[in-house]
Image 1 (cartoon, each protein chain N blue to C red):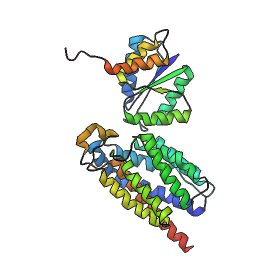
Image 2: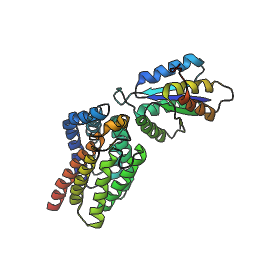
Image 3: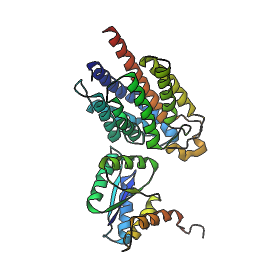
Image 4: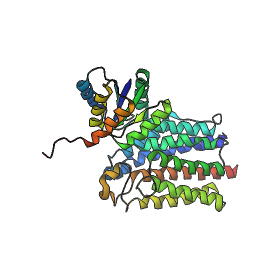
Length: 218
Length: 131
């Protein structure tokens, strides 16, 4: 891959590890209301392990790099989010076969969403990360393919859409995941998995914006 | 030969169930367990499950997998794919289903279908609580 892409990838991994540490308590609190309370530590463990074990340079292909990140998340994260994020990333990495372009980014995003839905068996409206990923991906795709927006702009819009998705999980009943055991008592609570999706997207977007500026200046 | 793989978020639960099953039907039972997350805490890990599936695959011809919760299924499917091992996941209560399955595997004419059905029937076991 290009050196700048490798740098950006290493940077986003480092940021995610940092952010995961900062948000561990918050995610744990959300999860303790509707689950077993381990989402915070799972996400922190997953992303700090990726930061420790993963390092890429231009000699690695983007597809292989993304695949490896997915693999580490699968084996180190724990809970349901690890396998969901991780295996979906692994199985979608092939979308980057030809490298990073706005088209391959859109393909990755849309295929990633299908993988998560397939693995976890959830549809929109069940109070899961699917409620956050779906609006983010759809908005991203529309921005790039219909509005001809830059990836930076598209990610920005995706974050706003993701936030709406996270908020949507609050007033609905969870019908998937540990929260579904609470049935109607799950209404009124923000889904932790959807929340971590937003966090990940935020760090990704900030990194992309930073490197896009750098690229523009080069 | 049909082997049972018991997957729980708790390694102690999985091992305890295997212990109960072996006590009920004897040591000829082929039963394998995996439980606990990446750091050994409550959870499941595709790595641990994959190791157990490999162990089972080395010793038996057919594998039936019984799990406790939905999130275990996600990891079981990942492990299956990773190892490219054919294993049938059975929908049944983890304790009672494993015991019913274990009893069935001991019958000379047992097949993966009959064992799977026996496990599923465990949903209907009457524990006599209402008497």
